[in-house]
Length: 116
Length: 111
Image (cartoon, rainbow over all chains, first blue to last red):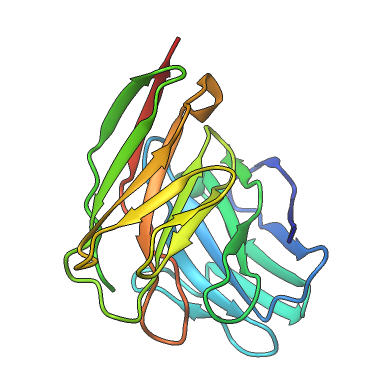
């Protein structure tokens, strides 16, 4: 089946630095990927929709200059958390739509970001 | 996007069927119902989806009412590994195909 690989699985960074998270579709081409954030004991919150070759579409309230999304190829989308602060510590998850019509969506295994 | 309502938590005994309800009274005619689950600190896992007819696969069955305003996910023989948060999602109508997660149901399977 369709597999999405997310890397790294966990990262610790210092406050003020930037962190890049990669999301790769391994056996299919993903023109559309999605980025979610999840705080402890809460549901997934959609941050943005990443479209190959065009600008990402951000959900209301998500700072596009802080969460930079690049989708330069059909198999890779990246999320860069810029100037990270402790409140950015969270579980970040990517997802890719696997096909047309009513096909499912495949999720990555998530990245645990801790900003110290 | 059509909203979904799920009970915050449920439990069932191992080996028994787990029936997880979901209300989606504002669903539109061309919107699908998706079910995903998330085991602690992992990405969500696809379970099943449907439009109008009942669906069954190796993981579960999905029963959708005739008016499509509610559905039930059935895990026929729950195991301890089925303990997870289960999300019922109605796919967005617009071309973005976004999946918007609600609060889900935390299912605890008891030994």
